[in-house]
Length: 189
Ligand code: HJL
Ligand code: ZN
Image 1 (cartoon, rainbow, N blue to C red):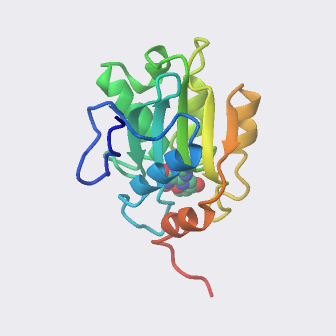
Image 2: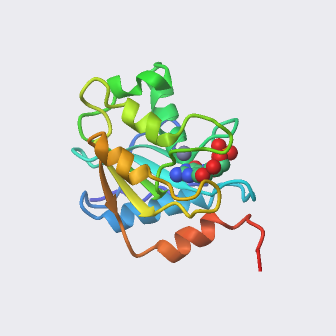
Image 3: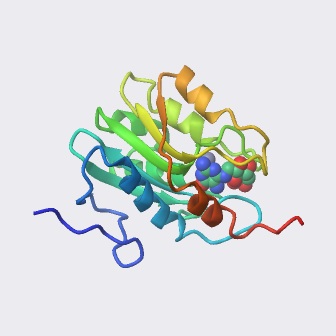
């Protein structure tokens, strides 16, 4: 019997791996779960509220979840996923590719960033780095392209694809993803 989904606030995922009742090819449901994590993020005018999941697509297990500013400091959702998984394996985030399962994928409500106004390392760089030893993240499921608010036209998709990471747009939740992502932004008109 499938286990129930773990809702973000009542069941923190920090150190547990869990199965869900989502079937492995049900990408919209995984994206909806990622979106539920985006809701956990504090609204701010200076970034987007994003939710992400690191999933082992071979075993259909969620390895970690993440959302913007979940970890201390100015942290992004995808970064939190990788960082938490690395911490669970007692390895620095830069080496997380060494402990990821062969078919690891990321679901993220907003396209991974290439450039950050803060100058911090981008999520695209972190994802590509996981592939340095041949394994690593092989696919990224994206809910929306990054809006041009902060850094203009984000080339995340192209750079990931050039590095051999497949990028799949999962449509259907764009409106809600953008509403959540921009909740702390100041209206311009
Ligand atoms: C993604 C996130 C997040 C963004 N994008 N994919 N996941 N916050 O968790 C992208 C946006 C940057 C701004 C500001 N946001 O966040 O371009 O301060 O948030 O480094 O460029 O940069 P900082
Ligand atoms: Zn990022």
